[in-house]
Length: 161
Length: 331
Image (cartoon, rainbow over all chains, first blue to last red; front, side):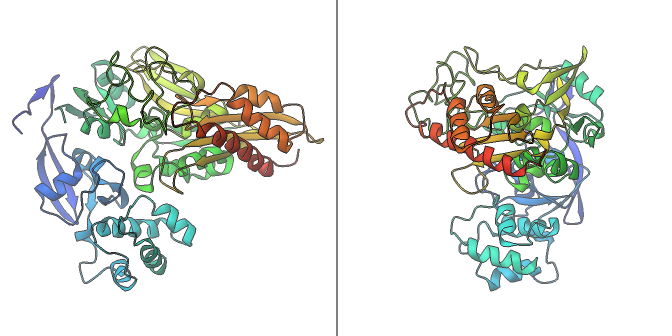
C-alpha cells in the first residue's frame, strides 16, 4: 500500500476491527479494498467467490449483521464494528440444512455460484421471502447460475423455508 | 482504483462540513464505489454517511409520507407506511436491483444513481460526454438498445436508470436538501436535468448539498397507484420501459386525477403531462389509455436499435393505467 498516506488532511489508511464468523479481526485497510478482497486475500477465506466484481452476479454474497449484501461493492472499511458471516461461518457442525438440501436437489453443477446462493438463500428464508415459488424466485434473482441449476436451487430453498 | 481519503460522519452537520471541504457522499456504495472501481468516478475524498441515524426514519403525517434519505431500499420497500399508502413507491423499490443491493443502497443515493450506459461505464476506450465532456458520444449511432428515446440531445442519450424517482415524479415528490447555506426544498421534477449540451451535469444539487429526506404528498391517486416495469428478463434488470401511474374518477366514471411517470425510456425521470391531461374529464376507455400512451411518446426520437421502446412504452402506459384503474377505490 505504498501509495497510501494522507489526502486532504484525512488519513486514508485505516485501522478497523470487525467480526468474521464470530472471530474478531483487526486490520489496517486501504479504503479502496473491497470486503470481498479482504475476506479472500487478507483473511484467506476463499469460500466467498469473485464472479463479476461489479455487483451483478451475487457470487460474493455474504451477511453483514445478518443481512445479505454483495461483498464486491462493500468497501471493507464499512464493515468496521459490524459482524460478517461467510459460507465458512455456517454449518460448522456438519452441513447447514440448506447445504444439505442443495446436495439432495442437485442444486449445482460447477459449484462456483453455490456459496453465494447458499448465503443468499439462508437470508431469503430468514426474511420470509421463500414462502412460495414466485417469491423465492424473485428474491433469489440476485444470484446468477451460469450452469442453470435454478430448478434445483428453487426446490432446495423452498424445502428448507 | 485511484487512492482516496475516507472519513465517516455521524451527523448531517458533520457530513455537510465534509462536503463543504470537497468530499463526496458515500452511502451504500452501489453506485459511487462501483464507478470508482471502474475509474469512471475519481473523487479524492469521500464521507461515509451510512450510519447517520437522523436520516433513517420513515413516517406518515396527515398530508405526506416522509422518507429519510439514508433508509435502505429494502427497508423502504417493505415498510408498512410505504406499502399501505404508496403502492407505486413500494413496487418501484421492490422491483429494483436485487435484495442484496437493496439491502445496501439508500433512497437518497438511488435518486442520484448514475446511468448504466455501457459507453459511460466502459471507460476511456469509448467517447462519452458525460464522463469526459466534449469527447463525443459513442452511444449515438452505436449500440443504443437500452438508450433513451425521450429527452436526449446531440451530446447524450444515456437513460436515467432509477425506478423510485419515476414513481416520485408522477406524484409530485420533493426532496429536502441541506448544505452549508441551509436547507431548501427541491421538487423531484426539478432535481434531475436532461443532458442538453452538458451531459455531465445530471442534477441540480450543488456539490456540497445532501439530500436529507424525501416527501410525497398523500393523494387518492397515490393510494391507488401502480408501478409497472418491463425488463429484458423477469427480475433483476433495469427497465426497458416502466410507468408509474395513478388514477381517480368521480361517481360517473370521469377521470378526476391522472398521473403518469415514465422510466427506462428517457434521459431523466419523465412526467407525461400531456398524456395525463388527455384523460382528465372523460371516462377511461381502451382507446383512451392507448391514446394517452401514444401522446406520452409523441416526441420520442428513436436511435438505431431502440425504436422498439416506443411501442413497448405506449403499451406499458396503457397497461399501467388499466392496473391503476382496477386498484382505485370507488369514489
